[in-house]
Length: 204
Image (tube, rainbow, N blue to C red; front, side):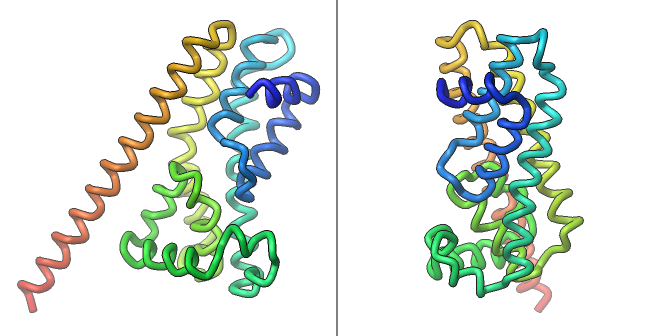
């Protein structure tokens, strides 16, 4: 986090935008820590960094990174696996697993993916490869998920900029809360699918 804060302090909004976009490519930089770091510099230097503008920049960066993965899959299709760096991100086994997630949960998996760092980029790429969802719908689902998490992390960093111990604890609590929320959503969706299948069997 200290490295990100230093980088963001030197280069401001553009640095935050850049890091969030490459986060969308699956680069191993935690997105939540990046967002918190953006909020921290807004809290440390309010005279030069506006926290609300930081939130706007963060949303743009998050959506731009996710959209890039979608369009890479949409434009190049399965041929994208020939590109070695992306082959590590989306192996044949992972491609199969993500497709199974789409079959199981439908487009809802796009909403859930925003809260799953390890699967986010592959899921977005597969949504483009399979062309199962239009870009408009993709952005809408991604935005609805991002508007839940992004403001939390940015404003958390802003309010905890001068109290790092408190901030570290709140980050941990926030991560646990998001995972709990995702678990509830997955269980609910699974229950609805199970119920719908049972009703279909009864009709047949």
